[in-house]
Length: 298
Image (cartoon, rainbow, N blue to C red; front, side):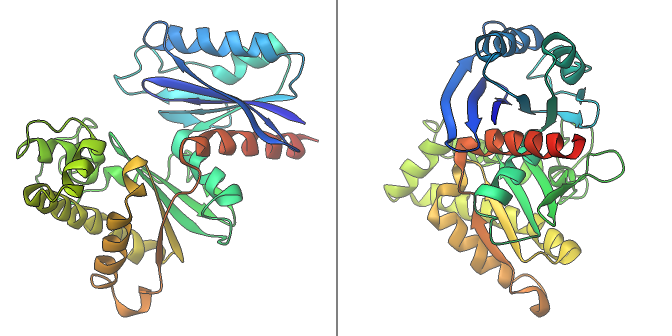
């Protein structure tokens, strides 16, 4: 069985064929031909048309709040204009007569890690991704817990600083604005104007820039503020951290050390792990979700 999987982000769309026997094949990255909804649809339809005769279903991982049963984008950020309200499932099931399943990108990454990556040895865990913002997913019995409306896991919008910075969501003091990779880069830029991204931060760190190290250490403390709450609410056996920045061994080692010093003794067996699948996590999760849904329908 072959699934055509997509992972829709703010600047790129990844696509791949996922074959039950051969795994992930034909991985491609696509730049938007035009911003927003029209650019997304253009890429999706081009790839679906190309592979249509070969595939048994379509799995889509996408940024934004998603009604996963209806396959509708409930809310998208300003980074993807005119995307809110897009009915991906309905549109493409009608056009191509194949099952289409859509889910939020962090939920997709969590499913990918649960079944193929760092979460394979755990039935339950929390998955967090650190980038422009912070995405979260709650995995219970190898499946993502969605809550009443399917939106559970928005840990990036928990408040860690009362009366703090105003978040794009309209709340004040959100975890997003203090512990995201974007926040780290912005803070480091204040002490080193050449810093442009997370890679620059750790290049400076590796060269012994003590001011950058100080910013990284303060940022790790911000990560801990959020994780303390997560651990005490969910008591998970593991927390899996995704995003390119989490490939840095120093960060994972420091988080494990500082977290254990910040939580109650009965919770200290929690393990913090880096995600394993990298850029493939969303694609693998979208594929798994589609295969699972097809089996449920049958």
